[in-house]
Length: 116
Image (cartoon, rainbow, N blue to C red; front, top):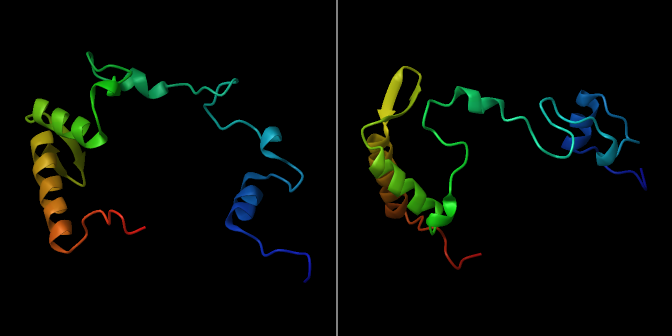
């Protein structure tokens, strides 16, 4: 019909949440775990092992890549994660990510710099 628009994905999400069309972002309920004032309870911090900082001083790194490389070298022997019964170390993670990057470059995917 003229003047009506097709429903969008976020319209469906509003319906799932029980919101009505008249509700605006300012009148929505805060997400579970949210704290008034825009903050969030950081409940995951209680699961950090001793010595793991709650914050990272990322200002000492020039890029995300530098942060990754520095820390995979520093923690090379530590376990990075376990998934589907396989565990890899930070050293493995660095080696596998370098191999993946080389594969992408070999296929001509060099970040598409300047091609936007």
